[in-house]
Amino acid sequence: MIWNETKECMERSEIENMQSKRLVKLVDRVYHNVPYYRKKMQEMGLEPHDIHGIEDLHKLPFTTYEDLNNCYPFGLRAVPMEDLVRVHASSGTTGKPKVAVYTRRDISIWAECVARCLTMAGLSKGDIMQVGYGYGLFTGGLGAHYGAEEIGALVLPMSTGNTKKLTTLMIDCEATAIACTPSYLLHVAETLRDEGNLDKIKLKYAICGAEPWTDNMRDQVEKMLNIKAFDIYGLTEICGPGVASDCEHHKGLHIWEDHFLPEIIDPVTGQQLPEGESGELVITTLTKEGMPLLRYRTKDLTSLKKDKCSCGRTMARIQRFKGRTDDMLIIRGVNVFPSQVESALLTIDGITPHYMMIVDRVDNEDTLEVQVEVEERFFSDEIKQLENLTKKVAATLRTAIGLNAKVKLVEPNTLEHSQGKTKHVTDNRKLYEG
Amino acid sequence: MYTKQLSVFLENRKGRLSEVLTILKDNNINISSASMADTNDFGLLRMLVDDTDKAQKVLKEKGITSKATDVIAIIIPNTVGSFDAVIRKITEADINIEYMYGISDSTEGASIAMKTSDPEKTLKAIEGMDIKFYGK
Image (cartoon, rainbow over all chains, first blue to last red; front, side, top):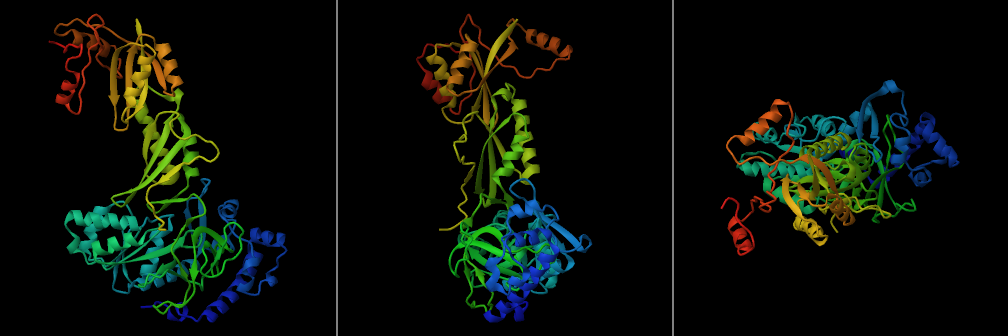
């Protein structure tokens, strides 16, 4: 099933024509409505009339996290404040979140994009979908929710945190689909197995995103639950989940090129790379009104394929992610930067800024342990005080990164101390294959 | 009136206690009493030693953090109710006891109580040493 065949199956030349027209309009819009972009373009000696189509894309300035930070929170909006209807946010490197704003039309295009993804996975009106992403500033919950409503599915907005209730309702309401992070899906599968309920579910599809996963993980969860599992990609700055997702042939994630113009660049030189070569994924939002972005650098490393897929869709496919250009970690679907942990620890008396984050996957759930050194002058001979310190660190981290971390106090001077570039993260999950 | 106590923060990992004790031995520091308070992740070794300042210094040289604290160390008569009497006095004075542990009788030599993962094996391991069992 294809949700919007006229768009999803356009000939390559039609796609490019549409992208060119939209890009010209977009450039005109940001030049006249976003002072930050106008200044950037003027500094490069660029005027809107210099951009005739996607062949001129390489002339345009990039947008980076630093730009978002400079314009925090609403500086990149291209419409009057009163036309905005939504804010979403995810964590940034410096503690300031990455904020994205949406107009009513942005929300409806987002819903359309997610609807395409869900239809691609096999869902239609009549399906019953549990949304196991967090609802709130995080785009996962509401994004999946609107997409499911768009196709006319029945939605159970479960959010996160109560697996027992999720499995109970999955059985009782005869849910046929679930949207959540892949690691959470495995956790759900194992919970069902431990409850002896694997044969009581009616689940057919899982749409998983917000963190990278391997084919092995997909095979494992598909077998356990006897379902088909699909990968969905997105990022807050662009809109959230629904930027791209994979079809039953699993040959990469179809990116909705009529709304998101993708390119692959060399992350060092910034030069565009030819089709098939690996580099950093860069996306230009062709239709966004609230906060359109020119050439946003996702920091995700991958490649693109543009040949027609066996499913009939012609939209380019994002190939397997090979990693990140920065040190961002995705833990239980939450973006975490070591710098956030560092600045949070610095606010606590008694802890030196020496720390080590140990990320692992235990029983298919991401775990985060933060080891911190007990500073000499705050070392106490009372267990109670040391335990209070542990609790305080855990609470501070919870506020700063939005995750429960296991805090472990370690002896002073035992963690690696800065000699140039200190390694602050040990990730034992091996999320990126090959 | 006060006795200096030496506390050492120890991560729960194999061999760590032994490392600390070896440092003290190598520097000819005598431990007259030791107590271990533990949690899942770390332990606190509290000791009475014959030279606290020197112990702190030699431990610090080896990168081990310790803390010297004043504690009240008292010998209570070995009679029914004497312990209760002392604690009652403290309680009535509205004083909270943060922690407490048994210490050795210096005239008799250090007495320690320990629980190990394998008591039988422990007994075999110390068999024949110059030790007496407490209360025998």
